[in-house]
Image (cartoon, rainbow, N blue to C red):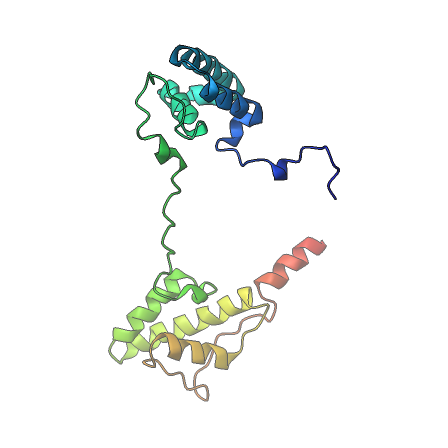
Length: 202
């Protein structure tokens, strides 16, 4: 509900530099409207002092004066006609958003997070290993670790078929576990999540 006569923030123009507040923004707009360059410059110097007081942490930077004038330039929407004491041609870089970081699982395996990065590397290794005792031992270790991971992150689910299916899928079918002969190590039914819940109950 809006009450007639009240000035709502949601109805105001968005602030370019919110850390300085709306009063400083109004001072900037006043400076822009002054008729002579001398008056605008004097007003700009006063605004810089107010900005420094309003946002004192800016002084932590070695070139904080440059930063303040850059901010003033941006707050004026480049419309303040003065002889700028600093080069403000690169001021807009302040508002540039950083490029999004590439997801570490950019290979499309982000859904393997419950197994972890190390396991994805093991899957890749198993794809190229020749048959033999060394591969069989790594398969045994890998399958049991997968089962532990499922117990920890899958709410206690440790389905043998799930492990076999995942191992075959993530090794492009190179590794096939015969569940009629493969023997998993004994893993307690209470996974990592249950252990955490039990600790909280104590």
